[in-house]
Each structure stands twice: as structure tokens, then as C-alpha cells.
Length: 570
Image 1: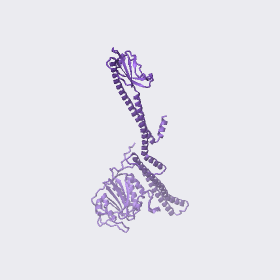
Image 2: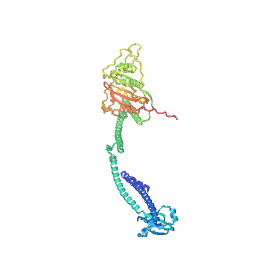
Image 3: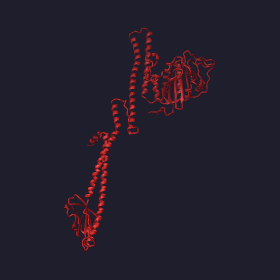
Image 4: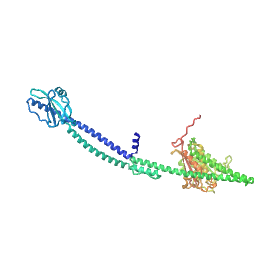
């Protein structure tokens, strides 16, 4: 039964619930106030009647006593009072209302002898008529009934029917006005609830439209500082986020499909080559040892290419798993120098420069003399060539120079292939070293991979004889440090800078092998940088080319990734 009532109540609409509860509370309030008022008013009226009865009974008793002793005339008593005289033994001698039937007279059941009347001491009695329909208030007082001074009893009573009629009239008026108040209250409550819940009905219709698949629906029309207005604002924010998540999901699915297709395409090419050479060997088409060696060489290169692609895919899969990083303080300057040495070894014809400074030096590098940057970095540029004097150490071709002079000079003009390296007139002189501490919380191998990928990108897409610079910058005010790879190639158009970090995306849609990698290097860079709470940006190099700049939070800054607690060894 209880469950059935609960289910029925749950099926009632919220507007009907509020209207019903409001009308019920209003009705209960009117009933309580009306009944309480009527009870207090009846008690007050009865007290007034009682007081008047006692006063009139005392006056009548004195008048009857004086008349019995011959000292005055009998007072006239109002016909509204019932008056009866009893002797000292309680026997009725005379009474009024003789013209009325007995059933309308008050019925006295108690003994009214003189002793009992004296004990009552003028207290009011409640009597009923013979039919039991009407109540009376009566009082009994002693009086003199004969000239000899014989005592008797005077009983005076008054009907409460007028009082009851007054109470009934009051109750009728109250119920009429109360019913009107309840009806008006119900109508006003329904109107107010309907008006207030109009925005909620709009929410209901919008939710139904969204459930049907229209995620462009938004809520509006409610006052912002109301509950419904705040609800609409929260729902609009939630809908915007859901819409954005659905778009991101669709974009992710599209990227995943394209990723699978691109991965299949990239893996199919080397597999077809390996299969082709294997079939040629099986069919005996490769006769001479030179042909067999050439086929094996091609198979090996395609296998290496396929292995590199698989390694990149595995690296991206590991990054997508968001496994915790093994964080430790890492200085970016030694990593930049190591990357420069690696680039020198792989491209001996290159001039690779490592510079460092502050954001102010970086922003004003094109306007400041080369000597300032050289002094700020602590060393002067060294170029390739034999030792010019006895005792000088010859630097290999494509040597690394840890200075800013080359960078400042190259930023003022775009290098050309005809430019020849300028030999210094004098041996390189050491400037007072200034240490730049670009220490970040990171996993060192991941940061090295970022620098390696960016360096490989710069070497691949810039002329073979153009210089490459690595720049380390520390921004103390914003508590961050950056490492930038600067090339002087053709640059990257602004319209594709947001796409180059997508997986398998390449500006060259022909997928020629001469263009280099598989399009995963920059995607790996973006994933690693994001896992370290960093950012990567691409800007134009002054004079031509592209600059890839990666920012990391400094160690100890609020944005730095947190060091993991060491796992206890069992």
C-alpha cells in the first residue's frame, strides 16, 4: 500500500505537487486559525454571560428577599432568564416560563436544599433542557422567602442558544471566506507555478530535442540571477562541453581512421618491396652475386625503414598510455650541446651553433651587436678550418660553436648557398663565461628525443650548407625555460602550422621517399612536451626559415610536473 501511494505520488507532475501542497497547507492554516478563534471567542462570550448571570441573580435575590420582608416590591426579571424558587428542603414552589412546554425548560437533577446551595457558593451550573438540545447556565443563591425570615433558594438560568447561534453564524462566515481564500490561493498558486516553471518547460523541450540528436540547442530567456537562470547557464555550459566533446570524438575517430590508413600505407610500401625482392630471388631472377647483394641491401633498407616506423608507432602508443614519467632535474644546455655534436657527426658540412640567454636577449637579438650575444653566452664562435698557428687546435669541418655571434649575423639576412664560411682573423678568444641554468623537471631521455626529432627535421628540410642553431632561453619571470631549433630553410606556411604535429601529416602528399620520415616525429614531440606540461610553437626565423621553440616549466615552479615517490623494493 505504501509503495502504491509512493508510486502514484511519483507520477504526479511537479506543478501539481506544488499546487496541491500549497492549497493543503493554506486550508490547514485557515482551519486551525478558524477553530482556534471560534473556541476562544465562545469561551469569552460564555464568560461574559456567566458574569452577567451572577450579577442579575444576586440583584433578583436581594429584590425577592426585600419584597418577602415587606421592605420593597419585587424586581422585574427579564424574560430571557428562567427563575425558580425552592424552599429550604429543595422543593419547587414557583417558576417562570409556564407558557413553555416542559421539554424546553432546564432540567435540574441535583438536590437544591439550603445546605447544598450554601456549599455551591454561587458557582455556575451547566444544565440542559428536557429534550437535551439546549444548554443553560444556571446559578443558585439563598434568599428570604417569608416575612418570618425563612430561607429558600433562587435558581436563575439563561439559555446558551443565542451564543450558539452567534458561533454558528461566525463559523458560516468564516467557512465562506475561507473557501474563497482557498480557491483564490489555488488559482494564484497554479498561475505562479505555471509562470515560474515556463523556463523549465523550455528546458524539457530543449532536452527532448537534444535527446533526438540536435546538440545545437541552447537554453535562454530566464533571468540570470534566478535559480532557473543559473540552471540554464550551467546546462548551456554543459551542452557546449558535450558538443565540443562530441566534435573532439568525431575528430579523434577521423584522425584514428586516417592514422590506421596512413600506417597501413607506410607499412605496405616496404613490405611490398621486401616481398618483391624475395619473389625475384625465389624465382631465380637474381643470377649474379651483385644482383643478389643489391636485393639484400634493398631488403635491409626497407626493413630498417619499417622498423623505424614501428618504433615510432610504439613510442606514440606508450605516450598515449600516459604512464608516469621518471622525473629528475635536467639541464637543457648540456642536452643542446650533445644534440649539436650529434648533428655535426651526421652532417659534417653543417655549422651548428648553441646559444643561450634571457628572454630580453632573445627578443632583441636582431638589434644587438654580435659581441653582446657572444659575451652573454660565454664563448666566441669557432669555425671550420686548419690550425692557423703552431699550437692551435684544428677543428673538424662543421664544428660546433657555443656562441651567439653567428646567430645574430644570420638573423640579419637569409643565408645563400654561395655564402662561404668566413675564417676568423685571429684565433678564438675566450670571453668571461656566464652560466645559464635552464633546469627543468623532466625525463632526460624524452627531452633528448624531442631535441633529436627537431634537429632531424631541421637538417632534413633545410639546405645542406645552411647553419642550424640551438638556443636555450630562461624566463625567470614566468618560471620557464625553452630550447629552440632554428633553421634557415624554406620555412613553414602559417596555414599548416597547426597540422604539422598531427600523426602522419606531411605537406608533401606524394609521400616521396626523398622527403624523409613517416610524419610521426613532430607528433612524438608534441606528445612528449604535453606530458611534461610544456608547449611547442613554430615561428618564422628572421631572414627565412622555421624556428621550433619548446617551453618547459622550471624545476620548482607550480606548473612543473611532480616528482614521483620512489617505489619500495620488496
